[in-house]
Structures are given as structure tokens and as C-alpha cells.
Image (tube, rainbow, N blue to C red; front, side, top):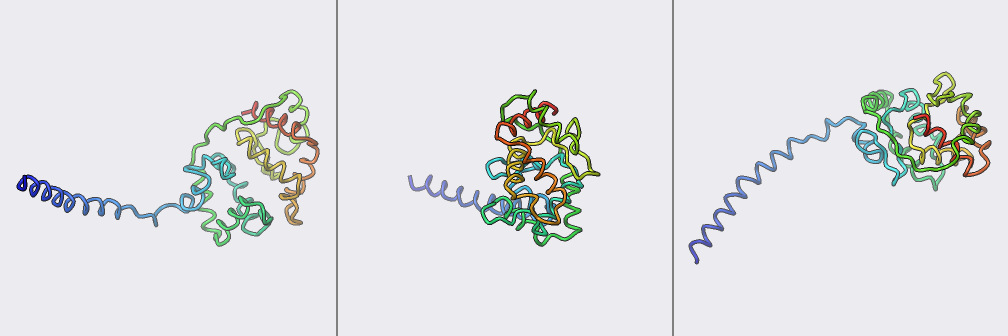
Length: 213
């Protein structure tokens, strides 16, 4: 029994000597330094190709207008958004973009622009007919079809995560968004969000927006 045991041990040692360097070479060939900044920063929370992650409060990014992305990155970087101590996602965003240069911001936005938009899941229920009536106030900026209006600083809403839209409406209502004196678009949204007087009002509007996808 000793001879086969020695043969087996030699085979194991020989295999390790051959495979280990090959595996080391394989992993050493993966250079994380060449990954785009969007993968290094955004994918951590927003997921691969910006699909979003509701668990950590990170919305989908794919399909967002480049001008809106830039506006929000600047607001986080310049502490116009996410300054409240108990607003964890806001703090994480501020930390992620705090040292980002204009060139890096351009690169991130360009990279996100190549990601394919994915259909968002419906998470709210309500009265779409009533929601259409309530949405008439929103349509003045975001458009009848919720496609958005860059001239007014209003992003498209159709096709976005309804759970995220709901959270943002609540943040506008509470003053967690749109309170900074330089955030004029945010101030307009605060006024509009306050017209939705109940959670059911919000849900009804979101159900209508979902119908426009």
C-alpha cells in the first residue's frame, strides 16, 4: 500500500505545481485599474450596468438623461443633496463623488449612457384614473407622457423605478430634497410634491406613470 500512496502524493504535488502558477497567471491578468470609473464606483450600489438595487436604495441608472445625471452628481458633490445625517444613501452618494473631477464625471456619464435600460418592476398599487387627474400638475414640467423636459430641469419619469420615485416624493415633502437655496428645480418639486396629500395620492400617481411605460 505504500507505493500507491507515494504515487498519489506525487500526483497531487505535481498537479498543484502545474495548476497553481496557471491560476495565479490567470488572476494576475485581471487588471482592475483598467475598469471604467462607473464600474468602480456606481456598480457597487447600483449594480452591473446600472440595473439598480432596491435593498440598498440605489435606483436604476440606465436610461437616465445625461444632463440630469450631471445635475444630480453636482448636487451631491456640492452638498446640495444628501446632507442629512440619517439619510444613508445620500451620504454614500456624497462620499462617492466628493473628489470627482469634471473629466471623471464626464467619463462616468458617458459610460452610463452605453448601458441598456431594463424594464422596471411594479411595486405599488392604486387608482390609475385618479392618478391621471393628480398627475396633471406634474405634466406641466415632466410632460403628458412623462418623457421629461430638459429646459425645465424635469427628467423623464416613465420607465423609472416606482419605489424610488415614491421615496423621492417623500424626501421632497419632508425637505430632505429641494431645501438648498441654490436648488431651484428642487424647490419647484417640493411645492409640487406637497400637493399630494397622502400616501394613496402618491401611489395613484405612480400607477398612472407606470401605465405610460
